[in-house]
Image (cartoon, rainbow, N blue to C red; front, side):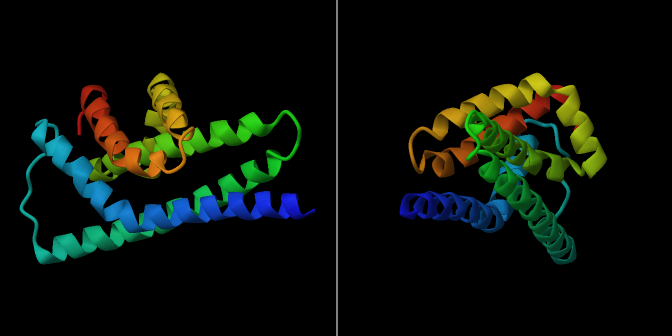
Length: 167
């Protein structure tokens, strides 16, 4: 009983820690993706005014809260499924998919993609997301490495999007 509660507490702690990480780092990852897209010539340089910056920050906060809520629900369901023998792989695949989508989502935000266009891109570029998911899965092997690798994944996703989509 104690071991089950410990595993449950640890799993839920990691999920909540990742959600907190997303909320805290979202503005920085967005700026990182925007810088990469601008440096690559795929995003137009628009002057940033205070009002525009404030609107964008509030929009990113709203998007982050929505994304964290969705990720939390999906992660909790996958976590519960992982207790069923043989379905542990569902948790791993779900986690990797969330990491890949989250890494690419900052470029989608900079490009002004709506939710429908984001999912269309996701469905069209399944191979790209699968490869990004596999790379992020490897970071799960070493505790804490995922948090260090996420900024690199954001940059890599922005560079890959640069090739695939007109921003």
